[in-house]
Length: 284
Image (tube, rainbow, N blue to C red; front, side):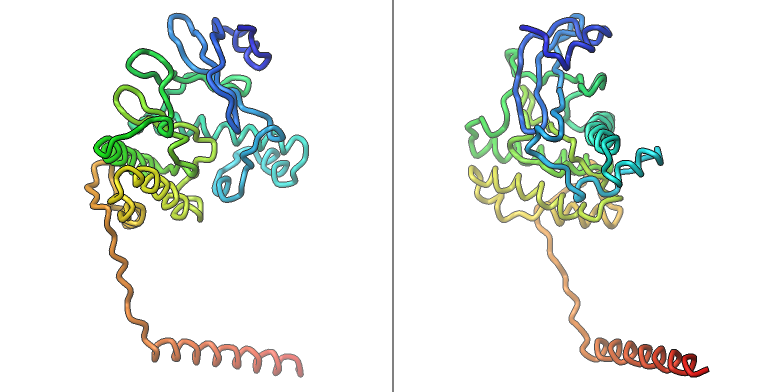
């Protein structure tokens, strides 16, 4: 096929030898099957911000550190340079997440290079060497649904142990190769320790999995892996081999009315003391 303009620099610089075909065009990027020497890989070409349907949100970008102070100021102001820097940061988030997750043993496509806004990574394939299907394109049995759900919850745990939450996990962001699910599409991945929305994002990711697989194995709809995982993470007890039950009991301590009234009374006394202090100083 004719080489797309965005891939020309990678051919000129020797990262790609041939563009074979376009694999897909999504809300945030277009993906091509390419040849790199003897290897067949995929090239993810990120779309410009004004051509994407997925918008960056502070829910996702909160906690991301920008080491260059000039870039950080420009991003905060929203200048033209700042918007360009924001785009680069958005793309780098996926690259960084893929390298970290691959190193942690999470089933994600192995990344190779990030050059001129294009991410080169493994092409996930099926038994016949063809591009692997998305999870939502498969007709699942009850047994396979339970197995894939178990595998993905395990991957979510391994991701969190590496400090990362996907943030947009669903049947549309999972490929299925010859050995099971592979998680893809991570530009909105968040830092679990630095983002105040981390718990909400994790619960949503896990709930999405339960809802999807629950169509085939209804008992999964009654599970609560999200809160169980988050509780273990917060207490420092989560590790890749954690044994999960799918159930979480929220123990609520009875409210002490006397304790609440005492706190209110103490607060009122403090406020009266402040008013008296200000009044005395105002007349000096």
